[in-house]
Length: 395
Image 1 (spheres, rainbow, N blue to C red):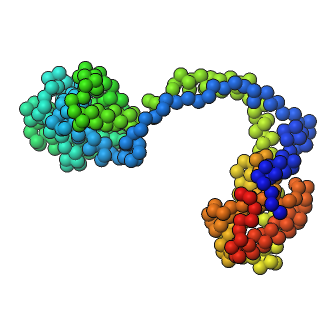
Image 2 (image 1 turned 90 degrees about the vertical axis):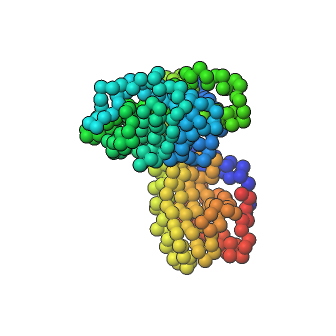
Image 3 (image 1 turned 45 degrees about the vertical axis):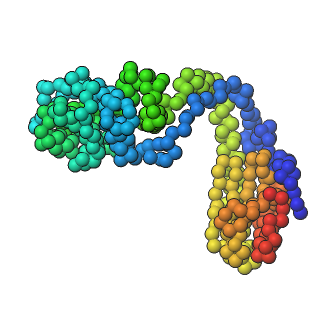
């Protein structure tokens, strides 16, 4: 017997209780469905541009970020942006205390005295320091601990000692992270000059007057590509929140709060009715498990794998038969897109060559009738599968 999807759907509608019929499951129960008429603003988000860090899933690897920082912080790299990025970093550190042998000192870093110099040398993973920026002309060392998703538990006292042993008069130890981080170890805390975020650094870069000139008239291909990479880097570091339409979100939030305030009781009653239908079909599925198992044993059918479960309006008993290399499921559904009781079969443990058909019995059939009909259908399906004649019906 062949049945099209439309016929399956119509059969489901004829067997599935409608909302008006739910009074059967609770004395005098009438559902207030006025909440479905509530007008809600559709969600809207700014289109997220293509981003190499997102595509390669490298945006959250600290070592990759360290390498990107090394490239842009070095004023002599081929990006052609000169001191633009290193100067932006220095400005975020303006006023931070220099670190001495015993922690913070009274000497405060003055960014204006250090910006514009192209004598910076940038290294990564120098004695385990993520980014190590040094300027011998200025006798300044910047120890930058890059934290993305990890706890700040690094030996920053040791990092500061390394920089001081290099002979730099001014040593600034900073943490760069998506959000402000502070060290919890009281012994380490005095050796931390500042904590800055990627948003802080990005905003400082954007405030640089030279950036607009570069964007309007890139000097060459390297500079144009570097500007694009810098933008992608800042987008990846600042996260998806920057792409959100907060005005739209605020409007939708307030609309939903209003719906819940006006229709909360009706929505709760609807969900309870929905859950009761789900429990009803799950209970029947459980009752059928032992009956089906008995009939499988009698018919000599051996299953290698079984699954018994359900989600919301659908529940199932699934069986894999290794002799035929086929899986057959008995499903119950309250979703009008599916028959109320139907059989779903497929090749092996995949979803290839799958077939769906109503079992051919209404809900009022007895558990024994449903079990007998299902096992009979299983035998027929497995015979066809072993003969290579599945699927028989329209998918």
